[in-house]
Length: 467
Image (cartoon, rainbow, N blue to C red):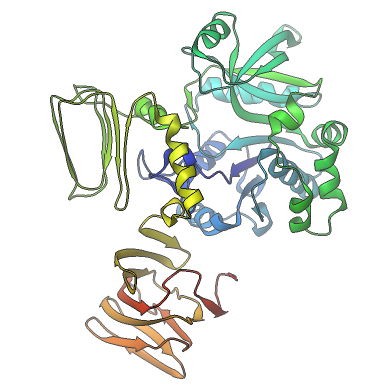
């Protein structure tokens, strides 16, 4: 089978841990691997697909996060297998584009469609469910239903119908009905009546899927068939999920039971559930050697902190402390975090988009201090990498090397700077920073000017194809 991984979500319910430029699928909040990396590993370890059979649909802003995560696994995907959406239009346009690319590359194929931000126990039951779905997909649009462990109001539900067998072997069920996220009493009734959680994972035959899109979602079909470019297709396509757009309309929907541990990590309550706990039920993740958690008479809290944090006499709290934002909420209320995100987004607050540390294809930068007229950053440039040849209209910059050797272009001059040495770049002058060495380059950058936004960059040359 081929695999299509969806990696374009923004993770708004996990702010401030995730941001628009570092969504939850790339955040390493459980261990040293991202959820995206875990998804790729799961596909390869179970033998579902080879590296050249894995396709990724993601936001164009996440291109280098995807590439870096894949390279860190020691892999390389064909260039055409990473599909960069020009804008987010929900899951149906993303999946349809991905399915079309698989078909163009390999012909009619069976394709597993996987979100990249779920935590799943990939055991024999998981593999068996996918092999059953592979057999059903020749005539059905297959989704996977997770057997509920309790009533849950944060998930959609699937009502199974007629059993689908091959000989005496049960492969799955026809879908009688999809149900939206219910209230608690309705969720209890669903669990008692054998409904499944809707996992958001699918298995499609490309030919069957495209036929059903033509029949039930002609606006999506025509957007891609009539467009001369992906940008044009996305402008024409509706913003619609795969559930609304096709799965709830088709008469070919089937569900395969998935009796494994599954968690979509869609809220901080879900993260609390999967983390280890101390003897008082506190789930704790500290972000650095300088951070520490001291609980005094405190129970059942989720604490993720970048600094020394102490709680006294509190319980059932969510405390998420990053270097530029602090979230405190009651457990059970974490679904409302997206309201905070929405408020900040309406205000144009940049903390919705990026952490103080922002990752770039050449390395990263961390904002150490800022004011209306100045900003101080620490730039980290990887060996052999260089920033774009660029110019700023509204700010000058002063670079001081603290580690490694920097090759610097300022106007027509090219110079080498070693630790303790510095240079000044006036506003309006072309410049470039490069690491020609074998160790990581660290530079302290001081910006001074009337406007210090990241969009005051005019690029003339760029190794990474950025505008």
